[in-house]
Length: 557
Image (cartoon, rainbow, N blue to C red; front, side):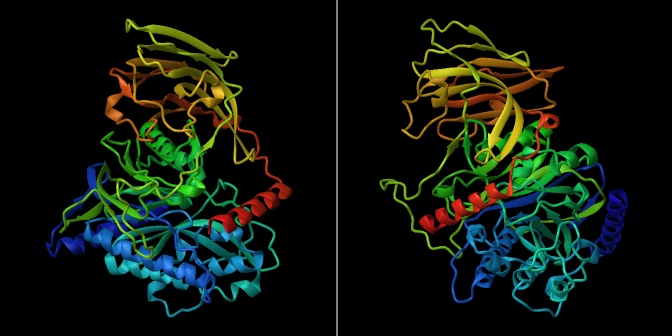
């Protein structure tokens, strides 16, 4: 089915290409298998979330309007595709709403096989307006637009009668009393405003208002008119096989569009660490749009070029507010297409305050925002302290965790700060124990003290600047997918070209040939997907989580 889909898209693009080339207006052929450069844009966005007399419709319409403005700005910067963030349309307020109110922040989404253009349809209603605005933005600006929203999929004939699209009746789950199943859904509009892809998030993270998507990974695929095959994924999907990893492995995808409202966890699960590691390990370009809400541990967006290993462009700043990054991306065309010439100069990022009033911050002012960070429990990790040596001579340390993984570190250090080597093979619990993932770790981590549970804790402030290294760290991993995790205590990535990664069978080695300033974490985190247990959620737990977030929202709003 997917091969037929790609063939049809390629044929349509080729027919369009011939017609366009006849005009000779600043366009050229893109052939399958050839290098191609496109311009990507990603949006760090803090969604509007104020309930007014318009209710949920006011929230979804305002966010759609703001994202439409960014689409116009992205086009002016020469962008071919803009990715917006998870929950960017309904905001995070949906999780704190009563059941009867949630429908007001959802949208009907057409099945992509219908090739519907909402902008061109004479339809109205509170659950279609935001989608129409976004479709019109893609059409007006001739840009691909990837958005994430709360989808209402009718599962009863009565509810289906209100849906303007001729979708099949939802049968994946038992139909609730309101007649709708809610999904966390990415929708892709092409340059004509056509809804060409609809992916429903499979791996939910504390989202009791949604059901996980059950459709094949192929629904996350779409091909652009410039010949690039993309896969979609949403937030917590990046920690699992489906759909992104599966589509990279099975369909040769080189470019992935990700919408997220990430939750920052140290020492290994900060947004930029995970995003850059996934891109570099899989050799793909990852375009990430993140939700900006540092008080809820959410921020981080970027364009990561693991395919070419060029410099990444990202924003990870609690004071950034709304910001758009626009940058060129090198890749390989998966199908024949047409590339349009650009009329504008590319700028790496543009910040803006569309829809949100934000004052400039003086360098002498105290930060206005708080960045919440969670911490993993490292109690079960094997660890050993890494003392300095005044002479600067290299030291060698070996460390195992059980009989499943052993790590080796050769390092030089004259720093008086506390560093430890960590080794671990076992379950990592996330989401207050709701999800269990099997991981393997070999990593150097800065710690406040010799206590392993002070490692990476920066709540009490940063220590003095220092240098650690050069060093080389290796691990004999059993897991198939081993991701590099490298970041400083200032929460900035270390450039990819400053360290190398080589593999020899099951042994991987990360080498940093020069001193690293203010090192936080440097090493590997591997995912052993086959050993993941079932998700541990229960209905009672979901209800408790919903109550927790409802109360939290009342505090922060």
